[in-house]
Structures are given as structure tokens and as C-alpha cells.
Amino acid sequence: MHEGPTPEKILQTGLAFWASKTLLSAIEMGLFTELAHGPEQYEALSGRVGLHPRSARDFLDALVALGFLTRSGDRYANTPETDLFLDRAKPSYVGGILEMANHRLYPFWGHLTEALRTGAPQNEVKSGSPSLFQTLYADPARLQQFLAAMTGISHGANMAIARAFPWKNYRTFVDVGTAQGDLAAQIALANPHLRGIAFDLPEVAPIFEAYAAKVGVADRLSFVQGDFFQHALPTADVVLMGHILHDWDLPTKKMLIRKAFDAVPTGGALIVYEAIIDDDRSSNAFGLLMSLNMLIETSGGFDYTGADCSGWMKEAGFSATRVEPLVGPDSMVVGIK
Image 1 (cartoon, helix red, strand yellow):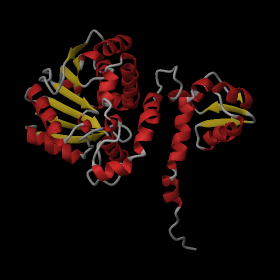
Image 2 (cartoon, rainbow, N blue to C red; image 1 turned 180 degrees about the vertical axis):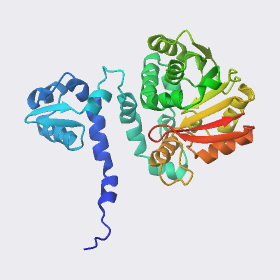
Image 3 (spheres, rainbow, N blue to C red; image 1 turned 90 degrees about the vertical axis):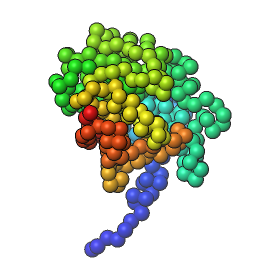
């Protein structure tokens, strides 16, 4: 018997915030970090994380049904994924970006309709407060937490770039907007012949230097402080911009690409990577939703297709471009001078 259309996908997507907020609250309460010590009985676990008796069983069992916990009898445990990626004590923790999503993005996305109709950001600046970046860079502790969160979400793509690009043809690179420095660190780890420059605002320097030392590449990476709006980029064989261009409007995107062109020699390269939207704009949902997030967070930022970025690179003078997938929704666009 032929089945007609059903509303299942519509309802699942329309109510997806239920599952999202359940996971985000579990991260906020440190549930997965608590369970990293081993399985716990219901009563002990609910007491330790501060759950009310009315909510505890439904909350924990919802996480079981969603695939984020397992349960054996009355004992709850992490899954392999939540144990690896959501235990705050492990270096593989990716929850930092989700903590930010919970505290900031979740309420701001409640105003998406207004953003769609006005084109105006819906974050702190809406109420006259400083922007996210102004607030973060004024607070070293919050800045370090944010940059660590960026490392968590970018680490897989950083490792892919370190291995997929033909680094044997180059000697030097500069990572623009380096943040904690994981991209530069992974490239250096995988390619011992390379020397790199990390370029970012001065507030980032101690965070980067501590990370480079921890990873063991401080002898081949140096930090250059600067503002890419005010200063030329350091010269190198390869310039990298990871999760940078989508923050800005089109004239700024083109300006940054032109600065990268000026910074590399003939034969040099620019690597741009983030959640590049597919050229048909129909399959990379994450990239398209990230672009809506830029609507929420910035005054002019947006994500873009590989064809868009290739066109901007060629307009700046790059002679050849290519788009290569990395991991998940991320791809890199490579321009050769």
C-alpha cells in the first residue's frame, strides 16, 4: 500500500529545540563530566547534579532515548561519544562551543524572525551592549574559554588541512586570526620542515604561546600581533584564514583576500576554510544555518559557496582555485598566485 506524505519530518524539525535544549542543559549541569568517573545509580546521580525528583527520571531517560546516555537497570553511563567529547576534563572536550550556544545563541535565535525581516543582528549589540568580540577580548578568562571552544569545533578540519594540502612544496605559512593556534599547531606537527606565523590581536598572544608550548611546536611557530583591518598581513608562502571570512560583509571579505594575495609570492597559496555552502545551495544545511547565525551575530557577515569564494580569489588576482572537502560540513577553498 502506497503511503502518502506524513508530517513526521515537519514535526521533528519544528520541535527539535526540545532535544537541543535537553542536551545543552545536560552539558551546563556537568552531567557527562560527572559520569566520566563511571556509571552511577539514579538516586546518586540525580542528587549530585541537582535534579528535582519531578524532572530527574524523564530528563535522564530522554538522554538515553536520544543516544547520549546508556542505562543498565538503575545505573546511567556515558556513551563512548559523550565520554570522549563532553567530559570537561578531557582535551577532546567540544562542549565549550555548546556552552556558548546555550548561554548566548539559544536565546538570540528566538529572535530569528525579526532578524530575517530587518537584517539586523539580534545579539548583545541590539541592546547597546558591546559586541561579543569586544566583550571577550576585554576579559582574559572568557577569551581563553572562547578560543578553546573554537579549537574544539575546528580540530578535525585543522588536522585534515595539515595532511591534505601539499605542504612539501612550501616552507612558511601564516595563520590569520589564529585564536588558540590549533590550525598552526597541527600543520607544524604534521610537517616538521615548516615554520609558521600566528597573526592575531595582542590579547591572544599569551593564550597562543601557552598552547604552542603545550603541543610542542613553540620552536617553529611565532606570534605576530596585529589587526587585519589596520595592518598588512605577514608575508609567507601560504596564508590561511579559518572561520574568518564569514564574519564580514562582501567588501571586507574581498579586502582580506586582496591582503592575502599581497602577502604571498608567485606560486604561493591562500587557504580559506569554514562550512562552505555547496554551489547548488541545497545540501550543506549546516553551512546555510551558519550563515543565518552570522545574521544573528554580525552586522554584515554571511557564509558562501565555493564558487563565490573562487570568484573573489580570481578577482584579487589568484590564477587557479579549487575546493576540497575536509570533515563534516567544512571544506577549504585554495587559491594559487
